[in-house]
Length: 165
Image 1 (tube, rainbow, N blue to C red):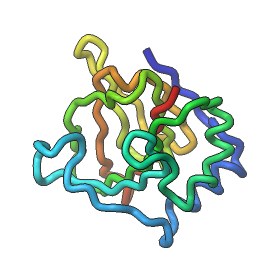
Image 2: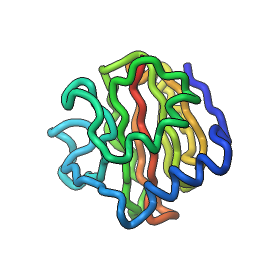
Image 3: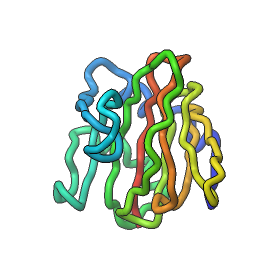
Image 4: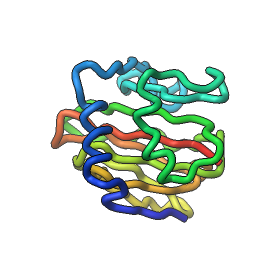
């Protein structure tokens, strides 16, 4: 159903990506909802779309090429969407709405920082919590129900979400 690989990238390559996404010059964009417009109006997050073949005809970021080592290591043949997610800290851990990505059968979530947040995969309604640990790659079918969370022990939870073939 899923596969987790810790220390996915060599330290030098990981540090490069982490430094970019956690810098004060990386552009994050406000999203008023998590999974659909009908979400709880108190939930929001920030995203950065690197690539979207469905809506934007491809590359959407000056930082796309900084992911080339990661994309090559994943052996991606056809990118559908790559976006970074920035979930802000909260006093309580919030599990966001269950959803599917509905754009591909192959997906992955790459954690940029370690915190107590994570991704929840649902197998027959049974939740499986995968912690956000820096340089951890989670491979899974994004058409299976899953949820994201924020974090409570770090200023942010940052990851990169991949949909591809």
